[in-house]
Image 1 (tube, rainbow, N blue to C red):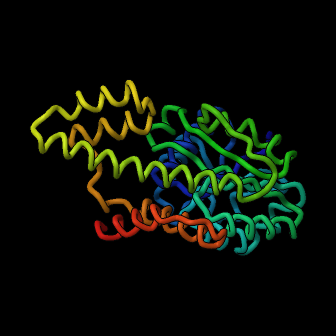
Image 2 (cartoon, one colour; image 1 turned 45 degrees about the vertical axis):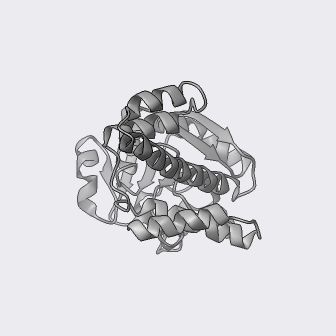
Length: 271
């Protein structure tokens, strides 16, 4: 992709990802609702856009990493965005959305002749900086082929192609986040019991994560919990938002989800 890449959303995850694009020598135009968050990237060579449409090159590519369905739809339906993206343009959404929201946004693109690829991200900001992200993606085959090099440039250690049906990647992300939140709750409760008994939480965690649960989630989150360095419950709005999306999607699909309902109540009680 020889033209400049647009990047919308410079939060804790968006900023290191955009920086990776710059270090990979992509021309970059950035936009954020709070303009000052773009200052560091502009100092490194990015161009600042005054509005989302100004980050778009006609027929080019733009990446968004925003909060929810409403924020992405507001940008896409905003003044000049789809007109400027135009025929052949590709919008890659790396936000955690509902499948229904993602499909509605894809339909807006289809009516304008542009294409939409969903590619939500698994990884914390430090994983983005270390280029250790995991990305499920879905969308038109030719659009994915066009933006695939950007996935490597932003720091993906692996990209999982889940097909052309919009909603597949966002569903995978919601399931993944549900499992992460469930694992965090289980680790917190289990290691609390170990400590209350007066035993070594880290030694217990090491045994479990080297045998029954050799998973990066159990290892990394468990290490923080065992050391007392995990963020306080309710500090982040992300678990409540993502569990809510999971529960909403489950209801729409008539899929039983009692555990997610319990976890959502638990997260809300700690907010």
